[in-house]
Amino acid sequence: MTATGATASVGDGRRRGKVTVATIARLAGVSAPTVSRVINGQAGVALSTRRRVEAVLHEHGYQRGDAAAQAPLIELVFHALDSLWALEIIQGVEEVARDQKLGVVLTTMQGRLTPGAGWTEQVLSRRPMGVIAVLSDLTTHQQAQLATGSIPLVTLDPTGEPLHDTPSVGAANYSGALVATRHLLELGHRRIGMLCGNLKWPFCRARLDGFRAAMDQAGVPVDPDLVRVGPLYVEGAARETAALLRLPEPPTALFATNDLQAHGVYEAAREAGLRIPDDLSVVGFDDLPFTRWAGPPMTTVRQPLKRMGTTAAAMLVAIASGQAPRERRVELTTDLIVRQSTARPRTR
Image 1 (tube, rainbow, N blue to C red):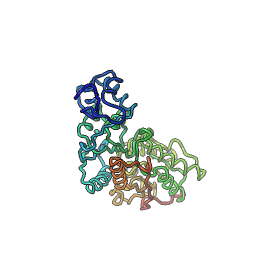
Image 2: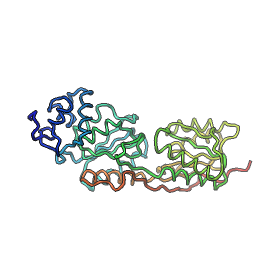
Image 3: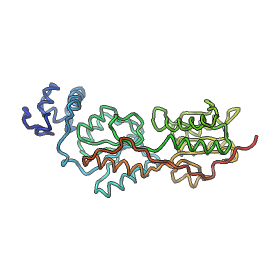
Image 4: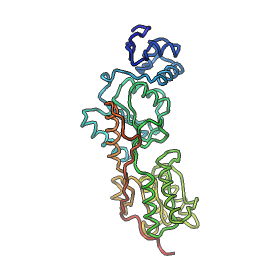
């Protein structure tokens, strides 16, 4: 590879539009081989230098031109794999991957929302067709690195704010929560509480907003003592519910941000000697398989998890083939599934 870059591209200096590797190297104050290492995700470049080169690449719209060298893989990234929620999304992605004769590389971040510093380099070295990041918060820098490497990114229920042009897929979280809360109001409940997730996450905020909107529209004030923020897991929800049930005026109904939290409500109610729905109505969100077999079967908002996976994967395949997405944000409809965990409040 020459340093002059009269013909520059990924690794060998061919021209891409009006921008060459040599031009990028000159503007960034580095050598052409250094630029090539950054573009190809190779090690051996100081972080400050890498970021300087990537900033110049991004500023000049430089993208790799060797799509043929990409591996037939979808990189699927989860913050954790600890519930059936993830499994249904994986099934949806794999369905599209099978049809397109693609493999799926599954990465978990062990509960962290943002991948570590070396993750992007690993992805660039694998050269997948694209990345789907689920319930993750890629930094602006990481998103720019993928864009520089011509690796498209689609986010699914991002926990942060993706770059304005990053496509994302999710469910109609606001309207799902609105309908769930209206269901409880229509049954006659007025002391309605909500278990929230991390309010930095857009989907958690949307569900809380939907809950508040339904209460406001019904003219029922939201008691701040009945709104609790906690982890989206059984144990944390059980603790928060136990605290709510000890209040002088406990709730007669609880809406949980997901089904795992709702399961925690069941556990706390059982410990307190309360019966669902006679003493406490419960609504979840997701419609995971166990909700049908809960005791009693759980009323919940069905989130089309598998279809969210197929939608994200199909969007990624289209972008990788050069098609611009028709929508940058796709929200799939939710449905309220009424089972046996909700009833009219007991007369006191």
